Amino acid sequence: MENLKIALVKQEVYQDLYVCSGNEKDPIKILFSSMGRVGPIGLFTKLNADFYIVKEEDTKECQTYKKVLPHMADSLKMLKTTTLNNLPGQDFKIPGSDKSNGYYSVSCYDVDWGSYDIVISINISLPSKLIKQHANTLFCYMIGEANLATKRVKFSYDVCLNQEARGKVATKTGVIDFPYTFVGMNCLERLIHRFLGKESEKRGIYSEINSSAERPVVNIPPLFSNLRNLGHPINLHKQLISANLVEVYNSKYFLKIGGRKLRGNSVIESISLGTPVLMNPNDVIHNELLPKEAWILTQEDAYRKIEYLDKNVDAYNDLLMKERDLLNKYIYLAPLNSLLNCLHYKRNKKTFSFSNIFKF
Image (cartoon, rainbow, N blue to C red; front, side):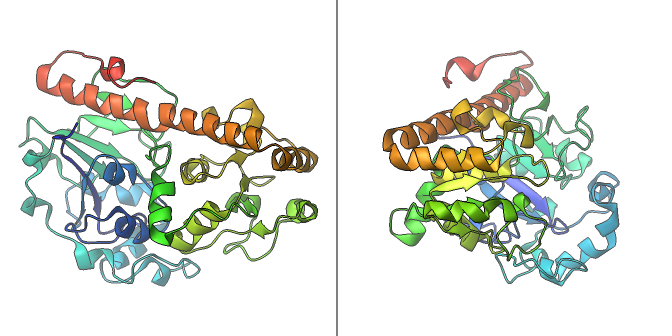
């Protein structure tokens, strides 16, 4: 594991994740440069990966992003020279960096991909002809929008990462479970603790962004109003990623009531930050991270659960540890085992299971 070399790469036309130099090695600076989501920051905190933004190539496969977000296809090219908040309809966003993707982009032909064991591309950043030149490197792609193009692997890549996290461990190349937010059980907590230099305040109830239809969120959702009677302030989503992570880190509870169903990236973030999640398991795709002790179906359920946990410190700590154990199993270990198995399979053309080495 110590000698494993991994690279994460995105195109200069991608509307999320990190905006920084390939020479940046501080995970906090990488994370805080994101346009929005946390993403696979565990690649940097746990596996010492490298990061690249590459220039848009005109090959057919590298134009896949236009099919992923067709309504934004033309405006995404603006990210070569400006920031996300200057794109049409994105003015409410507050990107973590004041630089454009293009400011840091390099030609994909200027990077020695053969020096890496595993290369993970967001969308199709590297052309097929380039991939074919490196027989010992495992090339993976993850389509930025979940559930798109995940039935089979294309474009001469070895692996398609499908954004699922069901605990399945792949033994050979193909479509494998790998979440968009790939983190360890306390990766984010350690980063924010180092950033702030202090422990969490453990104060307040954080309202998951999809509990509200507003963007940006400025008002307390109606279903949260009476929860203030418990003595907790209601903490709202912040547009700037660093401010939002600090808000979740300092909250005592992460709660979702009402609103649309979500994939669960925010749930993963909260658990890794050390803030236990309470919500209806039917409202999240990654519900494998929620033990029964975390289930709440109504506003009344939430009130009673928080009231109980406030009075029972052991139960509160036990809930967080159960969620973190599940995150470690489903979000970190299973996907990592799958990548290692795929790498072994490509190089040896036979299956081998690392799941016996990295225990769940």
